[in-house]
Image (cartoon, rainbow over all chains, first blue to last red; front, side, top):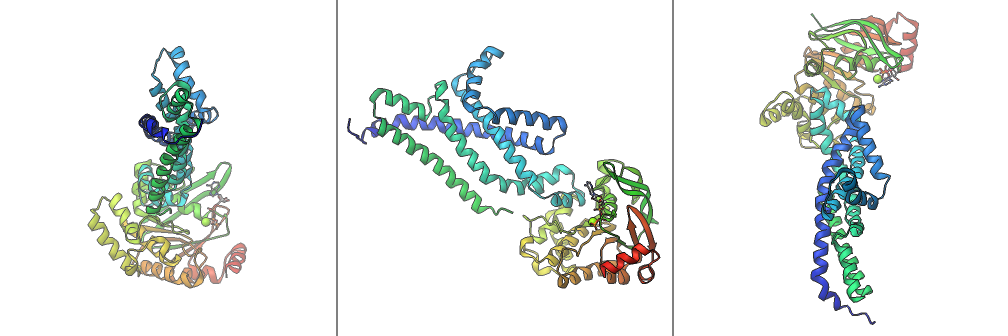
Length: 218
Length: 242
Ligand SMILES: Nc1ncnc2c1ncn2[C@@H]1O[C@H](COP(=O)(O)OP(=O)(O)OP(=O)(O)O)[C@@H](O)[C@H]1O
Ligand SMILES: [Mg+2]
């Protein structure tokens, strides 16, 4: 079979629908992951012994297991264990939340702890309560340092969504697979899929680089 | 009336006893210079006054409040005892003016404009009116330390605590900071200063304390105890710093 790039055009609507699903899982998952990760990261950095231990256990379990296993667990094992049936889409989003959350927790913890103790003391010494020191002084400084590693994690998570092919979510990779099964145009379709991923990750990088440039890292 | 009172105060770090039952009373208007070998507990003594370190024995009363009375009282104490650090510790994301206005606004609840106006006056006082909009990274060490002094003064403390304020500065920049401190002392500010600047101690200090192994070994008038050290270890120490 000769390569015929024009076939891509016929499948573009389908591919874009897949890409939309990929983006949806990524964005919703990362919003949740940011909330969970920030919480767990702050628990690690500033929580007492118990909070710290809970966050530590969560992070280690997630970082120590593959994301495919995590999503399989959510989709297939949870219904058995807890009689909790969730659709593939929910499982996919949850997997990104839980998985990205663990990595983001470590990023958040590192960024907060990288802000010198001296600044915290200077804040306390003028009579600020600790939470205000974290909100007004350490937080804004840590936030600037978060951006580069967070950007990295966002891209990893976006690409991780392709693994949800295993539970049959109609994201971009799955869509490519389905088109392939129908027309066997491997070169054209997988090239198109790769390019669409590149456009998504490239845009993400660009946005993050712009934010980074606007904000001086201190 | 004494504004700072150590009553048999001890401070341990784990098994290490860093302040050993210190009893010390500092009156309003005193300029106390604290000297002593490295590790003798000078910084710790200073940091106990504003509760950056919590005492582990005895009591410590600042402006009528014990540092052991909990977080709220501690914040009140910190508003009465401003601190200046060796490493300046200015907030890097804020301009000089914003650094100084920050405390009054966030702690004392002043309006933004009132806080900025007051901050401007304080920057004039430390000779940095023209640097108001500069960020800390754009200032020399001496200028940063003067902003840090203004920041501490902005919360209107009754006492100022200085922990080696000139140790991180090149010799030619030390004087500009010492001059600000001298002016402050002349206004009657109560000050506790850890420093190795013996000429400053003689000129400005009203009292000199030599610490050793977490205890006060010498307590006297700066000129007297520097010129005729009553203690051999202090004599050794003075030879090392001069
Ligand atoms: N957070 C801490 N944890 C454990 N030990 C500490 C801590 N802070 C200080 N120490 C110890 O307490 C002792 C006194 O320290 P401190 O900083 O008060 O000494 P110093 O007189 O200020 O010395 P220097 O002239 O070097 O600044 C030292 O032995 C130090 O190692
Ligand atoms: Mg010290």
